[in-house]
Length: 105
Image (cartoon, rainbow, N blue to C red; front, top):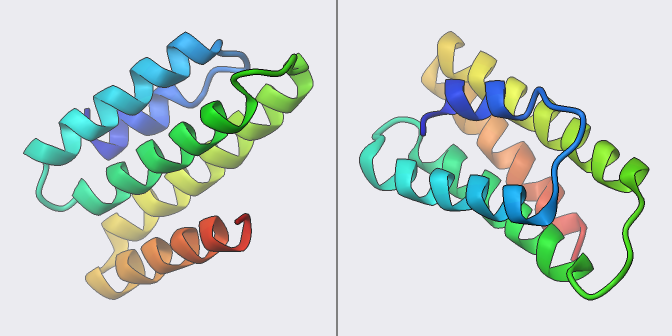
């Protein structure tokens, strides 16, 4: 998994928790191999794991999962775009995503 593949995966409108868990595993695995994308893949994997853990024991509407996927898609797209622009833009996008995650806790 790399950031491009993660962005493509997140284009879906629906996903179950098992699919989200598998995607997070693939992000973790990709982070171990990828150099530039590693931090982005870790942030994506951690955010997905948080979402799944938070909602694992409750009934979740398809709309909530769809909104979550749209949020993740937006972050992944911003990270991918910034990665292609410059190191500074990529670090800024990583920091923005990390700050967003921190604001959710």
